[in-house]
Length: 75
Image 1: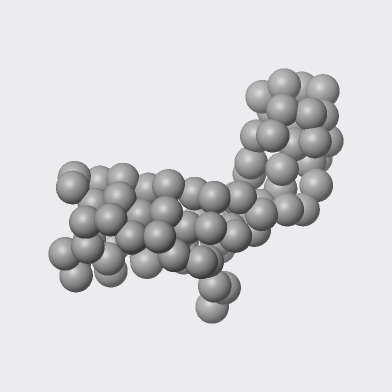
Image 2: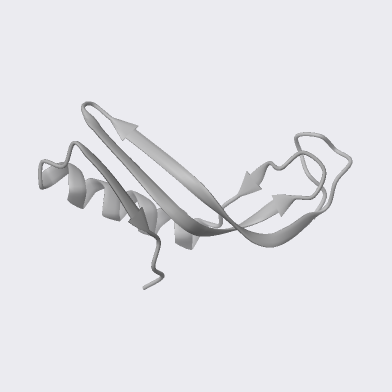
C-alpha cells in the first residue's frame, strides 16, 4: 500500500516497537508485526494485532504494572 504520511513510499512487511502509556503504566512491545513505509518508516499495525496489544496492555494495567518491556507474541 502507498504510505498515507509521505505519499511516496510503499509499505513492506516488517516489525516495529510499540510503546503504550496510560496513567502510570508504560508498556513497550518489541517485534510487533506491521507494514512499514520504505521511505519514511511510518508503521501500520493491523486491527487484530492492535486488539491484542490493547488487551495485553489492559491486563498489565489491572495487574499494577508500572514499566515493562515485552517481546510481542501472536496468539
